[in-house]
Image 1 (spheres, rainbow, N blue to C red):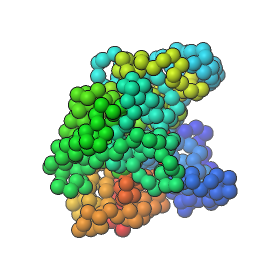
Image 2 (cartoon, rainbow, N blue to C red):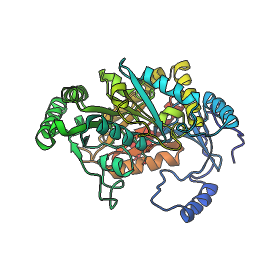
Image 3 (cartoon, rainbow, N blue to C red):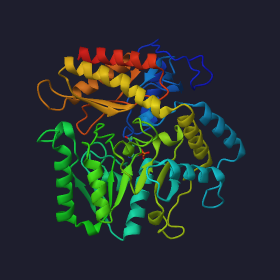
Image 4 (tube, rainbow, N blue to C red):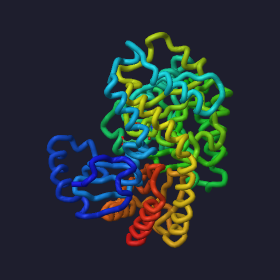
Length: 450
Ligand code: PLZ
């Protein structure tokens, strides 16, 4: 067992492998998990966590792993980040819940004020709070349908938006997200995404051709006057960290503006400094009508938000939106702690610096290793796409094998991608540089061995 009594940044910032991974205690706990939890709830790396903070996750056997996952882009400020711990600890002793719809409290309003202020665009905005990314995406669609009186929702290849009925329908990939879970929600239409690495005519014309194709299909198959919303991730996360070719997002936003369609940016994975901007849309100066956030917003407490134009969000009738727990006071305090940390510690700058360290090393590796078809991403949202050497064919077994080797060495990495052939890296933005470099060295070795 780790000797640490607390997690957070004061945990020793070191990789330490003292047993096989997973070790005996984790294996014992995993057997209990298998008996108590259905297998539908998968496991990336079956080590059971006792502490985490800074750039490490410590397990029940005392191993300290370098964290290139942040719990899927959630603990960007680090686990048990001091300002989060301090605020949540105070709040838990004051009151834990009233239901904001029953008797409100200030922290909810403060989070909304902050989001209205820091999200792209200087128009008048409103925000309301929910619990998960999926719940927020679903609410954004509800609002867009209500405001426009239209029903159709346009989404894209490789998109991921959640696991509820509507958001599973919005999600592109069948296995594991949709398989045998139908029937799906109606009025959802999928368009091509400007995926430079896999665009049939090559990356140069990708943005223009993909946008033209999407707009043509929307026009001919749905009719823009029937479209309530276009929902898109500025960088497709689960789909494999696909940055749409530059120009694609602005063109879509313009088309939406011309046709009274609500442009919804799903920044659940990309938001809160992850990409080296506070929000990924800023990279191309795209101003969404609605921006959906979650994950990194509250350092691990469940919170999500829908932020959008006042004239859209104010349309919904009194009582039309809500939920028992949305904007829980602990989660709101955590979010305020996150926002303070982002500003005080310049986490946006830290994310850029992480990209500046990772990208050149990965590109150099790609030059030497034909397994790597593409290196991409921005800030601390970086991926390599693996291919069968000499082709563009996806190589998911290589991704699995490399991830397994990293895990055995004490580096926690995640996979992603429509074809399961992408290794993705989402270190906490507070990751010490020596651990980042060490993690990259392990990764280089693992890729070299496969
Ligand atoms: N939108 C862009 O990335 C969540 C999924 C983990 P929830 N991505 C991680 C899994 O396998 O379930 C996500 C996202 C984008 C929406 C969501 C959904 O957010 O908080 O998981 O509901």
